[in-house]
Length: 234
Image 1: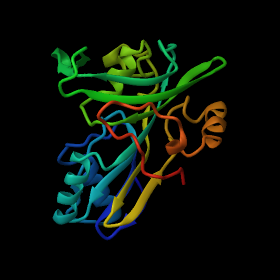
Image 2 (image 1 turned 180 degrees about the vertical axis):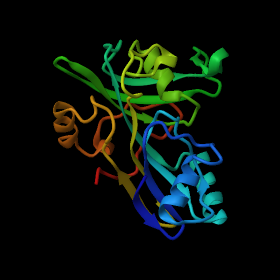
Image 3 (image 1 turned 90 degrees about the horizontal axis):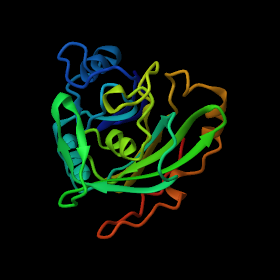
């Protein structure tokens, strides 16, 4: 796993798909510590096993505690890339609703909004290729993006738990992450490296032409600030 950004208090890695968070021998923390000869790394947020991309690991307990505050107070901006081979009910907007656990590890989106998951997205279609989504979650619920895109009628390609078509991987990638660390703006982006559809020339060309995602017109959500950290792909 490559280190994308290094700081005395944390590193940002590019997690490959298929690596679990919690395996005591072969999980993310253990793999990074062994590969890069590091010690005492701390998980401060999580990606599903099938999701690739930007993941922060704190290098000390004090930094881990500070990240807990940043994530809990929604001061970390995240952008994801997803692909689906099914057309969504709408091309952009917000998906808002409470989430409920179901059997077999699934979650469902409810119409109620007591403690809702909030997911914003823009999408674009390709001729003869999967549809691409730029996704900005404003909350951090388990399987949030996967459930949100399924609710649009566009389950993520390869996400068979949520009725996605079979593929060589689950096509969800943590494209970028941005936050302020004791007054310094941190922004880290990485393009997906695994998956035939992600490395296809058409998708790669499209992604290389994308503007700073913070400059996209994200919809307003009542009661929520949607002003993003000013960042851009690097």
